[in-house]
Image (tube, rainbow, N blue to C red; front, side):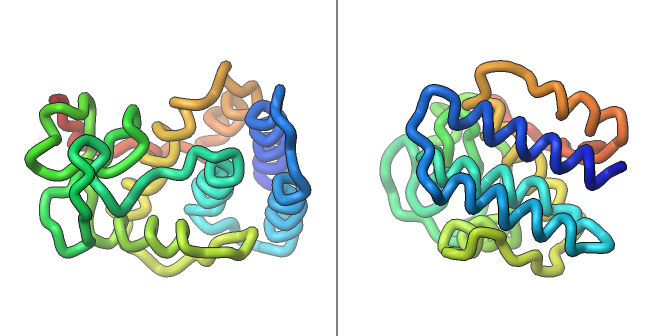
Length: 178
């Protein structure tokens, strides 16, 4: 039942994200590869859906910027401490610009590195490295908030996934408001 719910969600999300746009073959290959990966797995990785959501955002042109501050343009690295992510700006902000970025979320170095690996990945389905529960939680929450910036309406299949507690840990505990 969980696989069916996830497949329904992925199909509905793809449909909504490509509505009114020209959808290239890449979009449908992403859905096909993701559905195949879902079918082949006996246990779904915790980041399976967030990885799909992020890849879909990338394919439709909404990739988050994880290299430069969205406000001042300063180049950032995973060595920088106190980096924050702004869903409304769709990327990182440096410590000096956090107050100008609206609601932000601090990112662990581990989460930032995962996003950078995923953004550089050319495969249709992302790898799922072992990461800490904190990084997993941050990743799910940030992808969810980034996705919500671009969805024109709530997804019916997401409500079903909520009922099944598939998204039960998709929040992080330290939002920073600027």
